[in-house]
Image 1: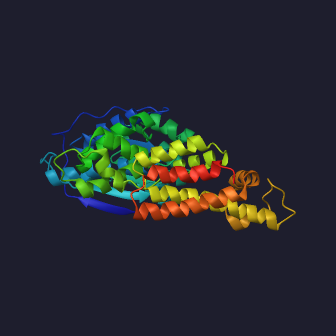
Image 2 (image 1 turned 60 degrees about the horizontal axis):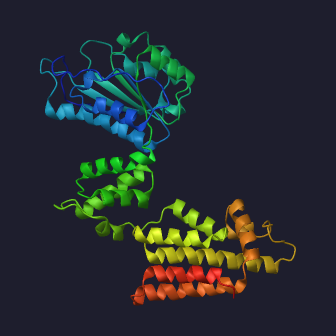
Image 3 (image 1 turned 180 degrees about the vertical axis):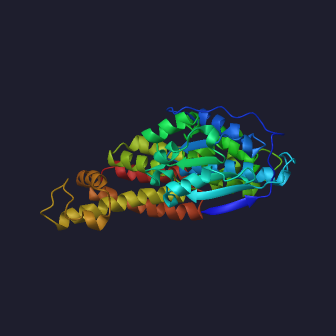
Length: 379
């Protein structure tokens, strides 16, 4: 166990109203923020519910819950906001659930005397302790808990026994649900306010478009941008931040590859233009096209070298290409339908585009279009 002690005092004065208890339910992002917000607004850690259980697959959100709890207990120590009628200390204890047995767990919620310090045990990785529900079952009632417990569980749902004990003990349950796509701009706007990044709504939407729906990655990106422009007095526009948003999302890479393999070149071209307008690097996009062409050429060579491997069967060379089998099947079928001259011409256009992007002012969208044209034109 790791214990961090804060020199605060305890008492009834200054307590805020207890936050409402949350039942286990499918949950939503709004419910998550409301449930967590009700704890973050407290000024007295002893006003926090005796049992708080946060669950969900997102480590980032579970860490946010832990940070709110830690800040509450430590902030109270720094501000001296708790009643000065007692000189007792408060202790914040951090422990992983796998380290606990029944006696250890009992020691976390019991106190041997009235003058023991008020404490909170932050129990992480609760999914690694199969007996946690049984441990909670040993608590006679909420009133018997002399210390606070915060349990972090990395699962989509609460195990049945743990759920029953949460209901019996009146736990404050927080379902850690990531923000849905329509809520992402508002989520990013909140991050921008937190880190002091002054940006227009169009710029914030560009961040969402560039990074995707992973809240941890969005948080990292907004924090990184705030290091560049955190002291800007005027709102930053999309054009200003576009040069720094140069990482193409995996889903866009896969989408482009799928369109090319389906020979849907019109939509592939439209996707490239959208990525370029969004601020993606033209060199990165040319690199994606060149990789596609080189893979197709290599598969054609493998098929030619092995007469025993018909088009559509990738067993003899799957290991050397290190591609998932379903992707390799698509590439094998595609390579069998494509003229080798078309692929070589497209690769040559990629090389020309790379040079021109670095040395001339030819519009980048035209250079991307020239590669697509080579794939569509018969040699």
